[in-house]
Amino acid sequence: MRLSKLIAFAAALLLWSGAARAQQVSVIKFPELQKRLSRQNDTTYVVNFWATWCAPCVKELPAFDQLSTTYAGKKVKVLLVSMDYASQLDKKVKPFVLRRELKSEVVLLNETDPNTYLEKVDPKWSGALPFTMIWNGKKSKRATFEREFTPAELTAEIKKFLL
Image 1 (cartoon, one colour):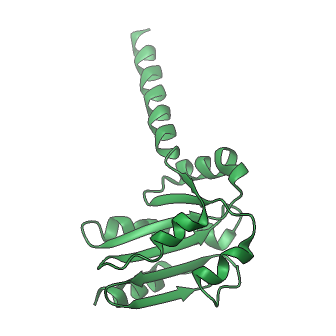
Image 2 (cartoon, rainbow, N blue to C red):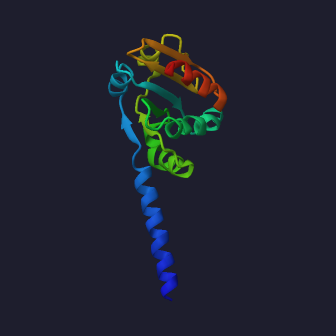
Image 3 (cartoon, rainbow, N blue to C red):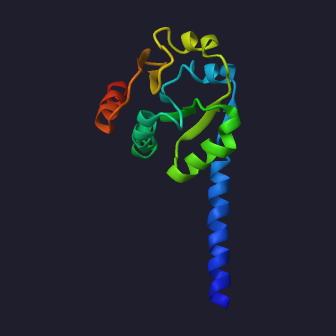
């Protein structure tokens, strides 16, 4: 009897801690994202635009999330920007983040008209997903990619910014 209570308590604690982590998906508007995309310091930023319904996005997410671990302690920051509808935050995005145990910061971009921000992110971005931007303001380096990455390709691109 005692063991079953202990197991139930441990299970509840695990569920609660997972739910707390899933709650960390912030909903932001484009002006807040734009501030983040224009930082001019010596940190290399990797911003991946993705969606739960985008198969190539989902396939490459572990490679982006691994960057947070690989470059821990270095000036590399990963931001995963969900392009799902804000109405899907609790039903899809948070459960997805929890299931995938994503460690990187995840935000949901709450904008309904891509035409108001696509060109501001990058004039060449058609709106297709996945889309990735890597930049380092201090080094004046910036690259954008409208395609899926393999882990090796992503690592090679990051290394170009760290040289």
